[in-house]
Length: 129
Image (cartoon, rainbow, N blue to C red; front, side, top):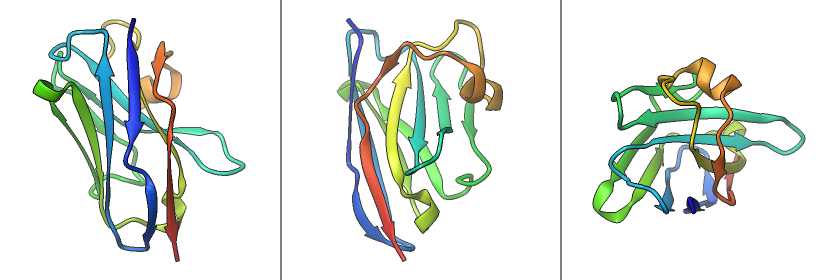
């Protein structure tokens, strides 16, 4: 049974940094796709980033490219989202997800249209101005 546990959110000032963690269980963590999504208050869910260990593809939405970085520690079954130069508009609940459609590279299309079957519970990031 695939399970994801997201953590690491908190309150940070504009320009600050946070690192989110997503601990995974129930699947082999050397063959995976992990995506990060966020949902700001009163807004729809937005795909932020995606990383595939299967083909090495990585994707960042334009609004975070150059500020956010995905990584992983396979020994710890954990994926990370390093967030730097945070802005108030980054305030949202952040989710990690896996089990995307098979054979689709990390891309804008995957984050916008792909159905991910397994989701973490979300962690709140608040960036104060």
